[in-house]
Image (cartoon, rainbow, N blue to C red; front, side, top):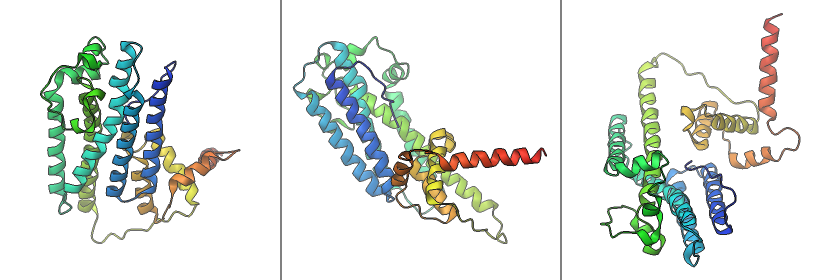
Amino acid sequence: MFLKIEKENLIIVLKNCYKLIQELQHNLKALECKINNIHCFLEQSIRLCKQTLENLREYVKDYSFNNPSEEIEFYKYIKPNVLSYLIFYVEQLNIETKRTKEGKKEQIKYLKKLISKFQNYFNNNLELYHYYKSNATHLDEQYFIRKNKTIRLNTETYHYFFDNKFSTNYDTTVATIMAYIKLIEYLKLEISKLNNEQQSMKTISPFQKEKQLNWTSSKTDLVELIYALHNVGAINSGTAEIKDIAVSCEQMFNIDLGDYYHSFVEMRNRKITPTKFLDKLKDKLIQYMKSLDK
């Protein structure tokens, strides 16, 4: 969802920290597949993120970094990664709690206002935003070493998630930037969904009968297709989550997929052909193409 973790030759403590992030990502995906209620999902995700952040704090509480690069590694990449998840889900919960369901136009207006709010944050932190986006390093010691922390008027919304011994000048700002980038993507996707609904309402004729489509292959086959579409980035330029694709397919094909994460785990454990349905699709399509040439 955010920073991709691919680090080698790290000391044990930092390796364990990256492992915590990977576990968090796995657990969040599992929650997303199991919980259909958005508010329950967000509340549980927030609890997971808070616990992971606390575990990180415990890891480094009594640890002395061997050199500045190790401390920069932690406060520039590791801690902001976890904190960005927490900020993202806290903000998303606030958005969904306050979001009106009365009219499409009102919802779109509300969501666009939030996009402006998050973009204003980038403008107010323009120097660090460009520093982060350009992968610059020349100010890392000033920004991400605790002993170099300056007394600043704390304007961060999320300062209450940590203590002074577990923070630097800008790790929270970096985490907020990471979260807001993803939140803007999320809001644009929600606006796109609402606009598509409005367009559909305009184009469907009152005399047009909707033909029911039913999925008649196995549930596991559909789950296999859903995960393939998600991982290839075929829906909404790759921003659609597994849960969104699954819910749309359930509605479109009149089927209850149940615990599709468990179905995916079973697919992974297939010893001979993990992608049985996709292989069948490919074979049948090639067979059909060849038949047209005869």
